[in-house]
Length: 100
Image (tube, rainbow, N blue to C red):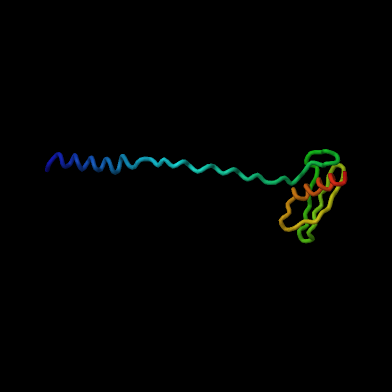
């Protein structure tokens, strides 16, 4: 029945539950960049139309064909299971540069 004892116990409760711990000084993790999907349509190197070339890949036959819808130029190449449409387009550009 000591008034000091009840004040002391209230102080302990106050420190442990209300005040809590100090905040951590750890920095938040950096935000991840969103992965952008690769293009499926490309600019034609012959007629210079934007996004007029479309790639059709036949992974069963290991071939891919890229065709321009405007000037009807096309290119066919062999592919593997890792190939993407952008790889076919780059092969076409490389073949055009080696021909010139």
